[in-house]
Image (cartoon, rainbow, N blue to C red; front, side, top):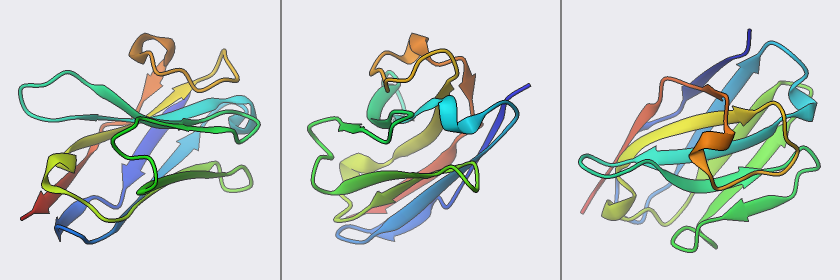
Length: 124
């Protein structure tokens, strides 16, 4: 069974930074494509960024240049460094694993396992 647990959420002022971490247990982490999604109140869950099993990264346009995804296969961990945060980045952030693919799809339905989420609040 694959389990994911996020950490690092919190409240920060606009322009600040936060780093989210997701630790994965079960299976062979290095083979997984990983992604971060977010969901704001009243909105659908949206793709933020992903990293393939080969460490190719992909981002939604709204965060490109501000957010950075990285993975540490030795620690079974994927990170999301968020800089220059904006109030519109406020959401619950979820870590997701695609254990059957190597690319990091933008499609929420491609991911079989999800973490419980961590709240990120950016105040203006």
